[in-house]
Image (cartoon, rainbow, N blue to C red):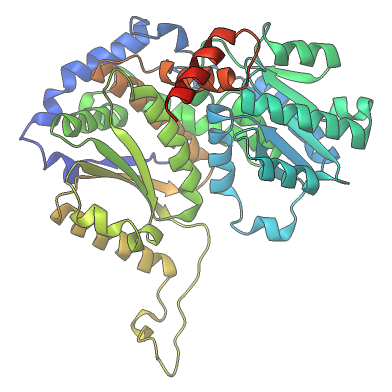
Length: 449
């Protein structure tokens, strides 16, 4: 099977001749720092060779647990936030029937614990009433507010509807090996559990049980997903020449564009199923690079839909952007455009053509227009939208992120800014231990009235 491919020609042309190649020493040094563990955040490099470290026995254990859940549940709720749900949701949405919810698949895979919307949680609990449902609780600490709040609701409801002993069989914990509230709860209740490795951060955790278990529960081939990632790990190895290393090229051109004033990267797809791949990518790059007052802002659009909303800005707005387009070469289904005798819409010139041919010409036409309008374009070509190539895409973006963050000069593996809102929220909620912060923030709010 061939690999995904990368075309940077329509981006490099916006830089001086040889600018991408000039990044080779920096990129090589960044990748060697990852491999040698000498970069900032080197205690979170467990993802780097994770694909080739996954064993058949480990995959079999994941699949066996998924089978228990699938056989005993009408719905499975994945409770997690950020990296604890986006990767799984990205893969599941990409591979699922777009209208699967109309077909009442068994089981339905639902996601919660990623917000604190009362209406959302009420409607979820209402939907689950009378249903045999299970829960995958994904949290290293077990105290992340959004996920912990949701899990408490779901645990109580599952026990009430199925009985405590039966509930134990359909609640699975994906958590720390030894520490935290979720580990304590799992051990106390006797839940089946999987470990989130200490050296793998949430946004790099798709190929751990964090992503693999929900994906397997949805009925998809995690073995093929891992095989794709393994293939890309080899294709982007440190010994692969710069000109042939997709991740190195991607890191180089985006850093070159950033230095030339392109501060926003827009992830583009022409396949609606890829919407949550973009959402996962936004967290991966935003949380990894956005620090020390540096970093490309990651945005995304779904074309051709958003050509009718954001297209004007992209074409004619401030020239601080570049696009990275994920292009699927061959769709999984085939649909021909019909002829119509009256031809009132004037579209008979398309009769007999595949719908995907129209989509591809929209993609090409948009790319030409945007490049002409001053928007550099990177193109990632994916042969098919299946587990194998999604595995490749995941690892490509992960290693590209690690290299790019190091070239930028930040620690790609921490997220200190995420804690700021939590501190304020806990103070406002009068959480024990935050008395001083509570007093200070309430005085501040009173003075601002």
